[in-house]
Length: 391
Image 1 (tube, rainbow, N blue to C red):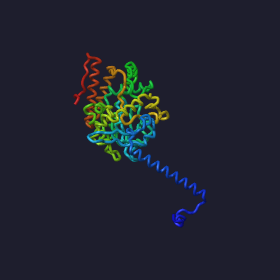
Image 2: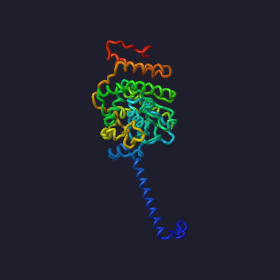
Image 3: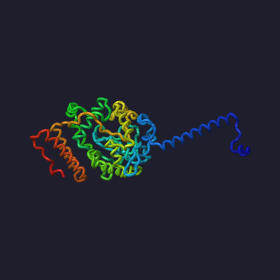
Image 4: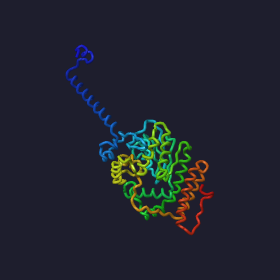
């Protein structure tokens, strides 16, 4: 070194201070090198293809900060990866569904399509408002509106024939009551009958309240209606998912996967048929989740002070929900309950007949299914079709 220049740039200090500064500089340099190395490693490895063990991926809450976008591959292929937080200011969309309409399946589909994290009304996963969608069952009694409700100006709405959605909802209640894993068991028929006699009339009224609320809250351009039946259908399901993908991408900050790759994502999430190279690892993650009883995952509708966000983490992406065991036998209703259900569906259809003819047709389709069940309960009685026909 030139000694004069050295003295100008680094003034003379006592030896003890010089040594301490040298140590500090060395530590800073080492930390910086480690940070650069770690950042490079994370960019090179996605969580579902890295050497990290399945158990660590499932159990580590810190993995949320390392997630990357799902990838579209040539010829309509896809690679599922962990989602990440949306950019600050990204508009939030409600994912509104009546219970038993595939809420868990849908929010995993949203994460796989957008590559962005989702949340729920009870903030069970602790993500708050830093999400692309918020799942809610509101105004059904198990749903609420989050504190940041006034910031949400759009929604997609998932409905299902109440003939099927109400028993599915009860299966979930049965699992919680018996501390069973989520989506693992169908309730015995005798348990359904006891619950049905006490609560079905309430749920029929709640179903109507749910549809009325969300259809009235947002204008046509700010809402998107889809059915569980359509989303899970083998023939049209991927097209329904494309419609959802397009709606999600209509706001700034959300850049969903290419439409050509939507069928691949839909097949992985909805039909539990992930890309071949990821199938084994996703299956292990699912098996680990299914071995956790609900008491370890956190009750989905517990009061806020009882919620355990870190313990209720769901598998995403690739988590499949339709894995309940037990006989898939019909859940019987009384004739009076079926009559009430038909009247409710007719009321919804007539209420929105001019505003949304598609919803009217959906309701009439549901009406016919309920009418078929009603005829089976009392074959000797005449059960009228809806006034004016179905279409």
